[in-house]
Structure formats: C-alpha cells, structure tokens
Length: 313
Image 1 (cartoon, one colour):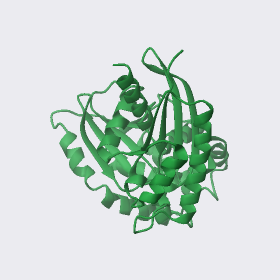
Image 2 (cartoon, one colour):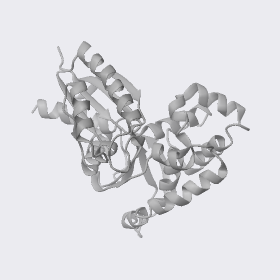
Image 3 (cartoon, helix red, strand yellow):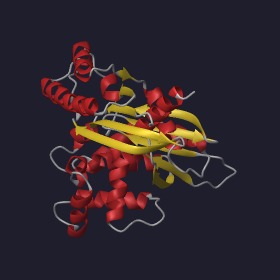
Image 4 (tube, one colour):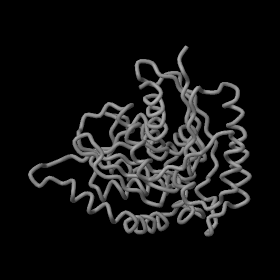
C-alpha cells in the first residue's frame, strides 16, 4: 500500500488541501478540497486579524481538520504564505494550529518561489531553457526568472488579485477602474524592467515564454478556452486584452461570453478575475512575453515532491 502525502496551503484567497499518492515518482490519486476564505483581507494595520476573518478562518480549518481525520495522510505539511507573513497575531496562529492539530510553517517569499519552481518542473513538460513563472496569489505575486533551466531570480510583490480588487474594483469594473489599476501596477512592477533588460540577449531575436501557475491564470485560460481560443495551449497579450474587454463590459455586452464564463468559472473567482487579469497583463507587457501557458503544478506540488523525496532518500 502506497504512502499518502498531504499539503495544506493557507493562501490569501483560499485554504487548499491536497492529498496524493506517488507512483513512479509521479502524483496519482489526487484528492483536493478548497475553502474560499479571503484571508488576504484579514489583517488590520497593526497586524492583528479582524474578528470576521478570525471566525471564518477557524471554521474553515475545523472543516478541513475533519476531512483529514477521516483519512489521514502518512505525511502532512501545513504552510502559510504572504498573508500569514504579514500578520502579527501569535494568539491567532496558535488557535489555527490547535484547530488543525498540526504546526504551521510560514515560509519566506524565496522559499515560496523555489517551491513553485519545483512544482512546475516536476509536473510540466518544458521545452525552453529560459522562461518565466508567474504565480498571482490573493495578496502577493511571485515571479521566477529561469535561465538554462535553473532559477535565476525570484521576485515577490505585495499585491495580488484579492488586494487589488479591494483597492480598485469593489464598486464596479469600469474602464476607468481598469486603467487606474494598470497605472498603479506599472509602478508596483517597475523592478521588472531591469529583469527584462538582464534577460535580453542583443545577439538573439527571442520569444519570451512564461508559465502561469495560479488560480488567476487557470481561470483566464479556462475562460479563453470556453470562448473557442484553444489552439496550441499557449496564449498571447491579445487574448488577455480580449478577455479584459469582456469583463469590463460584463453587464452590457458579450452575452455569449458571459454565459460561457458563468458555466466555466466559479463565482468567487469570477468576482476577482479582472483584478488578477490586470496583474497578468501588466507583467506580460513589461516583460514582453510572447506566449503564456498553464503549468500543471505549483506551490502545493512543490511541497508534495519535496515531502516525497525527503521520505524516500
């Protein structure tokens, strides 16, 4: 009987539980459970957790704990990312751990980037040696630059789909809101101009490729596929622009596309998709990305592969 490996990712949008087995060093028998918590909006300026999110988070963890108890994995790792990095509330962290019956490891942005990379390369067929990986979370965005198939640089930005939505798109998703968000994001991601210059070889005419790993990227690609965009499983800035037009004019135009979105994208994700798409568009423009593809794994898969390798040395 195979060992079971589990990871609980306490993210800014959702808490994700994933339990798997391995066969021939590949993930099989994949079980997933998600609780949409919006924890990226949970903290006060002092770093304390707001009562509303304290209750919501503990209730979600209680449900997850019951699921784990019914069929516990042999090995389980619980990780916290940007939202937990930003809190200053030891009592709440202790409550979370007591509810789960497991310790929580709050990982750094560099650790997160390395695990995302591990999750991508262990699950995805990658042909180019030089590429980027984007992970747009709820409250942060990680960008990994890969050269000669190795990590060259990891950058983390303290903005994500949930926090940008809270800043620009809560009342509407108008063209004005979208333009203002793009202007804001151009400043937030200004460091990427230097990254792009570092990666340009003046002797070559290169196509810059990127793999997207997050819920935002998955929802964007599912949406475009539902519109009939599925060609070679790669997507361009023009595709992203079309989807942004659909979302901006969601209430008035594009009836066919609107129906496709409702049938394809979870309402919780749809409500923040324009903000996540704005981040994706800005990064794509600054880094001059020609093609974007969906990776088959990311942070959670990186944790699982690390667990599996450590236990099978």
